[in-house]
Amino acid sequence: MNRHKHIKEPENREETTMIRLLSAFVIALAMAAGPARAEPKEINLTVASSHPLVVPWVGFIKSVFMAEVDAKLAQAGNYKINWNEAFGGQLYKANATLTSVEEGITDIGWVFSYLEGAKMPLSQVAAYTPFTTNDVPRLLDTMTELMDAVPAFRKEWEQYNLVFLGATAADDYDLYTNFPVTKLSDLDGRKISAPGVLAAWLRGMNVTAVNGALTTYYTDIQTGVSEGTLSIALGILPTKTYEVAPYITRVNAGVVFSGGLAINRDSWDKLPEEVQKAMVEAGRTYSQKHAVNLMERHEFALDKMVEIGKDQSPPVTITPLPAEERRKWVDGLPNIAKDWADAAEAKGLPGREFLKAYLAGLKARGETPGRDWEEGL
Figure 1 (tube, helix red, strand yellow):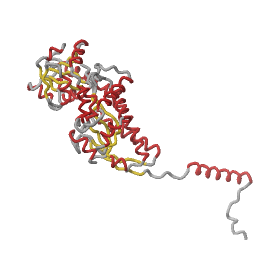
Figure 2: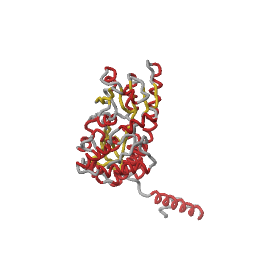
Figure 3: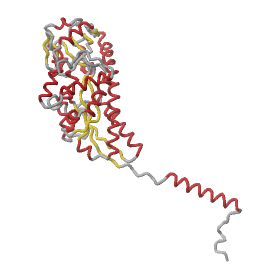
Figure 4: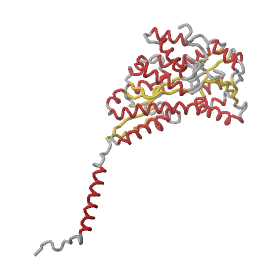
């Protein structure tokens, strides 16, 4: 007896051939698909800032840098970062951005080098060369280039256990006052809030520089401590300082390098090379997009202040400082860039060469500084 007679045999040769072809096709598909992809390895990192996400260069950490890193890693599928976000001063304030990344309080954070003149003197070059550039992309491209080309500049960051990822800037500086300014003599005897190095931008004029910060300008002007400020639109708009200083005089005094996104070196060394590469590339994208966005936001902020303040008394108005008056301001300044370079040299840093390289980088990108800051070097 045939023990297998209950098993149905193919009815004909054509049916047998079809079954074999289908089987081969299924096997081929499985082989083409390859083995099932393993789940990506998860990496936990903390990212933080002293400032909230509404600040442009902080918001871009999340919307650009983190998003770019995630997208690049997702393509390969080998790694995935679990971001622990602590923005808006949850871990530290503005006076501790450097030490907090240095000590690993956060893995990644924005370092406000503009407040670290003693520890990071070369990072202040743009602050000591006012009236040089109003173009943020050109400024940040130059600073990024210098970070790659000048060992002393890179060391200035790396000596604090940092790996630099991307550059940031502050927008253009103008005058915001409670009196109209159409010529420099209108500033004679006035008190203008200009903290830190900004006080040097007023040297050569009969002006008293008053120390302060964005958080104090409104009250200082309201109470007569000062009568205006040399500041940035993206700081004046959210603090509503235009309410007490409605006369905006466009000086176009310049944009400055304010710091950058950095990662703790110990955290960096633990990352796979693929993740490091993704972060370097995302950092450059972050810097480039931030630069363009800052230019757009500056103009938006000025227009917004006029719109919001049109019904106050006096209304917010914007008036350009006449070219000949701006020229007087520029020419009347002492050579603060040379003073800065000399001070850097006294600390054993290549201040003069760095200043020359900075100016050369801007000129190569089409900028024409309003002042020959190399004079006398």
